[in-house]
Each structure stands twice: as C-alpha cells, then as structure tokens.
Length: 166
Image 1 (cartoon, rainbow, N blue to C red):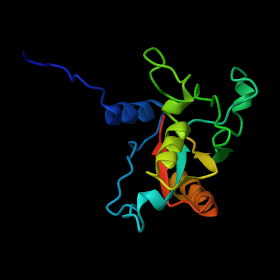
Image 2: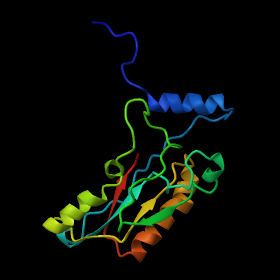
Image 3: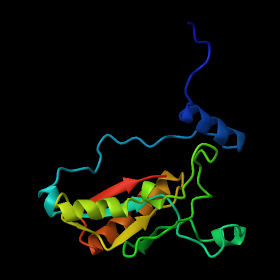
C-alpha cells in the first residue's frame, strides 16, 4: 500500500501554519534545550515529597461566563486535601469529541499518589498541587511561570515535581 498523505497530525506544521495565518512574520520556534534541569534523585523515592503540576485551570464560579476567564492564565495552587472534584479545562485544546475531563484523577492523580504514599513507594505528597497556564510564550514560561512553580515547590519542601499536562 502506498501512502500519499501523512497518517499522523503534524503539530509542528499545524502550529507554524496557525501562527502564520495570525499574521506573525517569523515561524513559531519550538523550545529546544541542550542542557535540561533534570537531575538524579539524591535520596530514594520512598523518602521524597512529590508535588503535582497540571495545565488545567482552577475551578470557576461559572464555567460558561467568558468574563470568568480573566486572570486565569497565571500560576495557581490548590490544596490536595481535599482533592478537587473538578477543574476548569474547557479553555484548553484536547479532543472534546473523543474524550472528556470529568474524571479529575486522569490529569491530577492525587488519590493514586496517596496510594503510593500508603504503600511506601513515595515518602509524602506535598500539601499543594500547582497549575500552570498553557501559554505559548517561551519567555513567559522561562522568566515567570517556571520560577514561580519552583519557588512554590521549594516552599513546600518538594523533592520531585510530577508534570501532568492535559
């Protein structure tokens, strides 16, 4: 069988075409780093405190009110106890025809991590989880959002941050 068209979605091409259609003169540049800030753990995972970072937004008074989105694109934090029963996801891009976000545990697995704490696989769960906006600005991510998440994780004495994008 000969394939004449791609059988996958090229997100890089799609994103470049989208930005070009918006009038941007330079093509979108995907982030690329030769050196990444990942490091081996200095102690066993069973002794580590773990924090969750999600791209979902905090719940809103009314999810249908466009005015409720003002100020939503900023770093935020929420308590893991009690775990939230819902977060706001309608402003994000995901296949809304094929799936849903009614089960918060699928993108904010607090209860799964509690099970790992109880079994001794991880040391503890941080008291807060954190939300980051899905902002395509690399500068904003590097200069604002990432340092703020790091500050909050250090404040909670976190050893491991588990990133769970939606």
